[in-house]
Image (cartoon, rainbow, N blue to C red):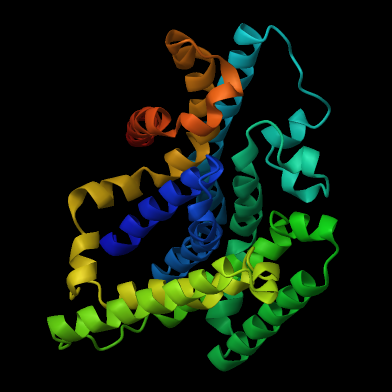
Length: 336
């Protein structure tokens, strides 16, 4: 486990949650965070050079990781609606959400319906299915040729974002083949990083300078997007973040075990622990918000979505507790 990357997972997960609570100062970190999660997912698979001699076992491991928590969140949300609203308002697209196929439908009322954030799992599932084929391609293709194809794919996605209609622009954010490019970019970086960079003799001061430089570049992209630059806004769903996110991942991977001051801060136990439950934080955020709004909030004289914009301070501790409990349950089931 690369502790600094695990901590980054936790940081980005919290930024995404903040964004979903209409805290607009986290807009850039949230969009960058989504790109980070796709890239890091592919990166770690390729970096570890996971053995896929049994494709069936690989798929089983991933299915056990994704579907139980997704089904738990979706079922709990339906049950909560039935108890609190006394109405089953789920339609024809519910089976799509159960099977994590909603991100293939170019309709915002479908892919953002129900457990809204599970669109990520829908796109990630497609990447997981494609992983054995992608790994075989990366491992058997000349690295320069593979990178040329990767860059071509990135340019194609960039062009699609630049010239998309408003409807397609929103859809591209969730469309699995588009997010597969992020994931594959991560795989290419991971495969390239299997040969460690020679950072063993980098001094703490130099390591700190490298980390700060990576953060400053990342901050420059955030500032560019926040400035309202039209080109940056057009590419802000994914392509804008490829370079700064990739740079963060490569930097902290290369300095693993030889961290500078930033890396040492990222290896403190609370941040690493937060990163370990980041998956649960992301998937359960909508459910926990509903629990707060419909069960907890009435004790304070409010009800439902009325206090959504003001519930973050109360919801976040509840979310972290429930995410930790779900993580522990998943570990217990896995070991049994």
